[in-house]
Length: 198
Image 1: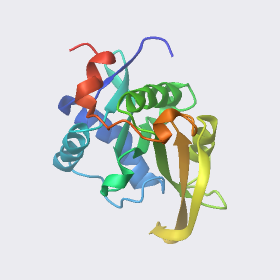
Image 2 (image 1 turned 30 degrees about the horizontal axis):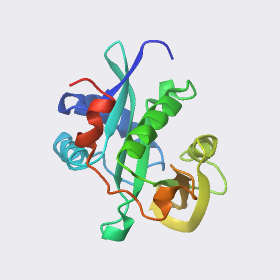
Image 3 (image 1 turned 135 degrees about the vertical axis):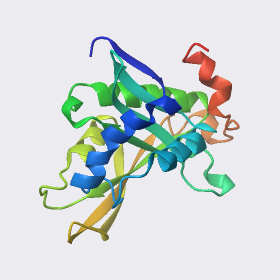
Image 4 (image 1 turned 180 degrees about the horizontal axis):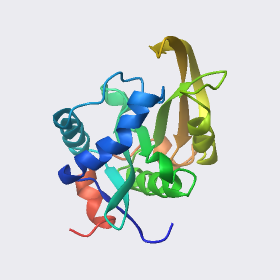
């Protein structure tokens, strides 16, 4: 955990982030994508998300260890106070507390944006196999997320069916004043200076 820097992802990080993400696509059912996105597609995703939400990386001595980001939960306006969160770690660096550092940082940034609820969509299998286990679900449970929905056999990859679950975390207490009349959502660019030097 020493010498780990949390910072905003930049365009120059795209190759490193793709190298973190590619094994999840090619070797696991963690991601339901069949093909690793091109650098151009990944760069477009980064730009689209960073136009309003945080996308951050964990770095040690110039090496990207993993990344996390938030994205729009649903396009309709009533959902504005909710986001979907995602995290990917280099598989050699899991279990070292880096995921916790990333998620805690991300959640603090979302609170500053007046986001109230974070959701995570997680691939699921009743019986772990060589492509999918329960590590992501256990990680989210440790981070305070709770199961809110299960969709069995909704994704087909590697010649077998996998399900997915939604997990939820309230970023502010349910009885907080914001829950009665929530504060307007602000772009991450408006609060970024609270977390990172320009």
